[in-house]
Every structure is written in structure tokens, then in C-alpha cells.
Length: 274
Length: 326
Image (cartoon, rainbow over all chains, first blue to last red; front, side, top):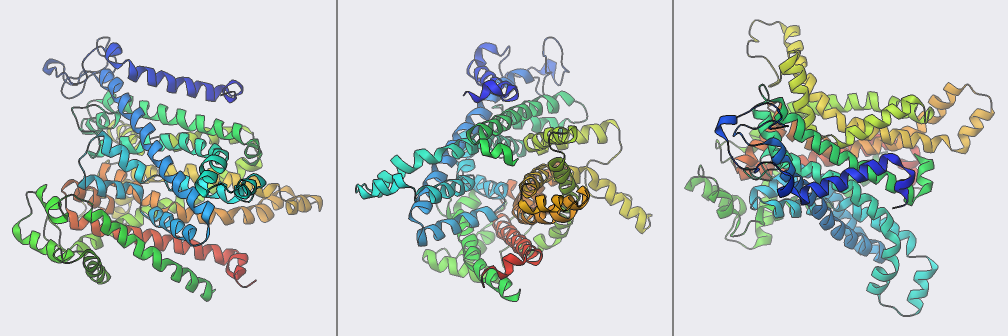
């Protein structure tokens, strides 16, 4: 975490993410209104002191809905990426360590997965499965592991010829012990970086899905589905479109800036390259 | 060159089967068998459509026979009939494809025209004001939700200023327009969608061009060119740019899925009758045959795009096409 001290932009990004996590943890305490309470007398009222971000077409307080929506975005981003990292690391390390036929089959599989535009694949699966927060996390994870697999494989290819691996082999250690105890810990740095960028991507995907009506279903609030009603009321209620979108933008921007700073700090050589 | 293309074509065959296999798996993913799961959610599906679907997958037979059967029909571009209007899926795709292709090609040309100069100049003048400003825009472009950008553009240029129309690809009253007026009308409709479609690619490619150029500028031959006393412009644009462009071509091929994927977002928002919108409305209507047919077709278009990018790469870089023979 030392890199945050040298990089004020990354520090701000990090603090924003911490702030968002705190907001979503404390949602019931912070939110002034219930996120689902309908108020027919206050339909589509513009931002005011009572409702800082206005109300939606059912009179629900937009700020309160956004505070609860933060829970969705943050948890989907985190868990979906964890799934993707797990699959990608497993496939990448097996392909990189064993090489040969196993490697070419696994990498061909990666190529095939990459020819599907992710959003098309996700929509096709979301049509079949039940739409809730868990399936969204799993589906985003299942369609987002390929870059990690490539990264880990590349690390393994260069690490497996090193002396410490040869030493481990000479000591008669099992393959799985060499992979997970000896090589993998040394290959994790780029995975961390990819994970931080991946969270930004997963948050964007979830919000797009909810916006399109394939993600989190109203009345449960998510930043994406608030924007969906923003689109329906675009000519009368700008606040429904501006605030939730800004929240997504700031969140993904923070993750991307943090990822960039992390990449620079883990590999100073890269800083010279870019 | 011919042997290079031939080699790539042979390499594509397993990917081809992989794509159909994954789609087939997705179709059968549904618990309780594909037809039941696919039709129970859709009240429009009658008994006849159900029977047709069973015939399409041959559900009474073993799984591998079903797959081969489906593959044979697929070769004949037979994806069955749509649940929504009972038309052939392939016909529906055919009428939507040109619009999406046109928008994506326009976007790609724009991305190429702007991203490369931006990337090259920010690498050349690293840490300059220009470089700093473009870096900010690149990060914004990566992070901004495209559908939100679309909404903002609609609000600003459509609702507030009224400069551009916000839905469809042409006005309703086109009857008394001449050819050029019609063309202008379509162009006006496409301004906002194309803006949204290019943002992600512009950010990604300009960043990539920048790092590629930085890499090239550190090479010995650039130092040699400078040492010879060549003017800086010649060094950058003759010696540097040519080499920096090579990896950019591959990236363009890799960015095709993202571009096509983006069409779901902007076609839905701007009500453009292309593939993305058809895919969205079919998914919404649980129109299985259409969704699965399109999934395969789009993966193949991506594959084709990648192949074209590889060929372009081989044309400009002799090391690639002759690489195998050395």
C-alpha cells in the first residue's frame, strides 16, 4: 500500500472506494428514506433540500436508492472478479505449467471464448437462468476469466524454468505443490492488477445489464436500473439519468486509476514503457 | 502469402467447432431440457413452434447426434423459426446485418483516424500538456458507462439543443426528399450513436498506439536515424510510425467483439434497427431460436474480422508471413 503515498491521484481513488464501501455498509443508517417506499404525491420531483437527488416516477427518493444500489455494484464487482480470477488462475497455471497438448487445448478454448462478444454471451445465458444478483455475479465471472488465464500462463511459462522450480522438482515435490506453493505466489502480482481493472469492468457490465432489464429487477435498486427509468423519463427528469450514471463513472474511474497506480508500483519497468 | 492464409484457415476449423459447441451447451444449459425451459417462459409459443424446436434439436436422440444434426442445419444457415413472428431466423438476421456492419465500419474508420495520431503525438511529446489531457480522456473513456454517455448526449444534443434526432436512423417524412437530403438525414441520425460507439475503442487504441510508439522510440534504429541527422519528423513518421503501427493492427482485430457487443447498448438506446437491437428484443421476448442463431453468426463475424486483421498484419509485416519458413 506504500504506493498510495507517492501517488495522490491513486490515494484519492482509494479513499473514494473506501468511502463507497462504508456507505453501502451503513446504508440503513445513512439513507433518509426507504429505497422502495412509494410516494404518489412526490412523483418525479426535481432535486430539493428534502430530496437532494430528486425522486423517481414512483416518488421514491433517488439518493436513498443510490445508497442501497452501491451495495449491488460493489458486491457484484468484487465477487464476479473473484470467480473470474479463480477460473483464470486455475486454467492459466495448468496450461503454463504442463505446456504441450494440454496448453494448446486450453488456450484454444480461451480463443473460442474470446470470439463471443461478452455481452451477447451473457444475455444468452441470462435468458435461460433466473435473474438475480447471484446469477449475475456467476455469469459475469464465467465470461470474464480469459485475460487472467493468459496472464497467469505467461507468468508460468517464464517462471517454470527458474532454479527454484528445478530445485523443488529435484526434491521430488508433487506437481500440484510446485504449482500452488512455489510458482503461483510469484505469479500473483499481475493478477492483482488485472483484478482491480476487472472490478471496474464487472461494475460496468452489471450496470449495463440492469439498465437493459436483464440484471437487478426493480423494485430492488441498482445504479443501472435507476438509469433505465432515467431513460424513460429523459425529457422531464434529468436528475434520474445524471446522478446514478455519475456514481458508476466515479466508481469505475477510481478502480481504473487504482489499478494503474498498482501496476506502476509493482513493475517500475512498465512505467518506463508507457 | 497464400500458404499463410491457408494455414490460418486451417487453424480456424477447431475454433469454428468450439463456437458451435459452446452455443450448443448454452442451449442445453436450461434445467428440464431446452424446449420446456425455453418455451414455458414464452406464452406466445404454440404447440407447433414447440414441435419445430424439438425437430431442430432432435431431442429424442442422444446428445452427440443432436449436436451433429444441429450442426448440419447450421451449415445450411437453418436456425429455425422465430417464436415472435414465425419468420426464418436467418431472414431476420439478413435484414438487420447491413445497418450494424455499416455503423461498426464507420466507427472503426473514425477510431483509426483519430486514435493513431493521438497516440503517436502523446508518445512523441511525452509528459507534455497534450499527453496529460489525452491521458485524462483515455481514463474517462475506459470508465464511462456507454449507455450513460448515450443518455447524456441525448439530453444535451437531442432534448436541450435539438441538434440531432435521438431515435431511429431516418425521419418519418422522407418521401419528398432527394437522395442527398436523405443521406444527410441518415447521417444526422447516426452522429450520436457513432459517438457512443467510438468512445471505448478510441480510448483503448490511442493508449495502445502510445505505448507501442514509446516502445519503438527506444529502439536502436531510432537512435541511428537521429544520429544520421535526419529531421525529427522523418524519424517519427517514417521510421517510428511504421513499426509502431504493426501491433496496433492486431489490437484492432481483437477489439471487434467489443465493438459488436457495444451495438446492443447503443442500438437499443437510439432505437436503431440493427443486430444489437434485434438481439436485445429477442432476448427480452425469450425468442430462443433467434438468440442462438445470432450468437453463432456474431461469433463467426468476429472470427472473420480477426482473420482479416491477421492477413492485414501479414501484408504489412513480411516477418509474419515468412516466419514459418525460416
